[in-house]
Amino acid sequence: MAGLRDRTIVVTGGARGIGLAICEAARAGGARVAVVDIDGSAAAGTATRLGPRCRGYALDVCDAAGFTELLESVEHDLGPVDVLVNNAGIAEASARIGEQSRKMIDRMIDVNLRGTINGTLCALARMERRGSGQIVNIASQAGRLGVPALAAYTASKFGVVGFTDAVRFEYRESGVRFTCVMPGPARTQMMDGTRRVPLVRLVTPQAVAAEVIAAIEHRREEVFVPRSSGYLVRFSGLLPPRWRERLIRFFGLEKVYSQTDPVTRAGYADRVERQTRMR
Ligand SMILES: NC(=O)c1ccc[n+]([C@@H]2O[C@H](COP(=O)([O-])OP(=O)(O)OC[C@H]3O[C@@H](n4cnc5c(N)ncnc54)[C@H](O)[C@@H]3O)[C@@H](O)[C@H]2O)c1
Image (cartoon, protein in one colour):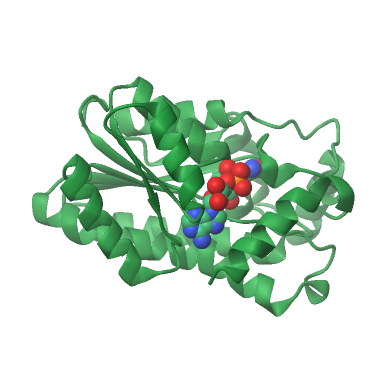
């Protein structure tokens, strides 16, 4: 797939943050964009702002049957799906996993991992029949590095990274491509109220979106944002656990999610809670 002009791209969690930036970048590249979000009115508003050949759809990515219906609607409205970006995700922090509610732990695994698997299965069936297409899974650097205070989130993202690796191998000859994107902390509502430390810089959603578009255009299979962080994350995987913990402390990463400010995080926490109750 040379570029995105006249291609149909579906972006889950497309109403805000990184998903929104991907929708905007894809639209700028001439794609037809399906903005998919659990917040259907925000998705519709985003699609209207993006302009013609863009549509908004309401979907909870945990709903496997709903995902199939969604892709049918997109095909009917915009044409066959060329690219699916499994971006929808949630992150709730808690200094220790034992302090987090079971409901929130389950919901993180459901949205981040099961949602990605749902989307992949639904799109793969269609793409395999046509012998082309690309599935882009937005994981995280927490998919390669155990981040303290984000244990459940980390588990879900390790799952996304491993799942993408395995299906890429299984479908190597199918014509369907798989990309795993691993951003570092990004400037979205998901980071509201987390502690800022000098050595952990936030990337912009636009920087992540630019890498996603480049990965589609250049058929990249594994992308770190920023790119330079990939060396450090890969290196950390070679270290024994205590040395990895030292590295995390050196960067101050253990403070980022364990010392959150509940007042500034309230907006994000309330939204996730509300969206969880919508099930
Ligand atoms: N922000 C970061 O620091 C960061 C870093 C690495 C990876 N990521 C990943 O990037 C992705 C996007 O995160 P973001 O920072 O833009 O978050 P965000 O909270 O700004 O936006 C997420 C969007 O997903 C939607 N959503 C949530 N649950 C959904 C569901 N069940 N079904 C459909 N839509 C749902 C929300 O309504 C929201 O519009 C996530 O997968 C996240 O894990 C984020």
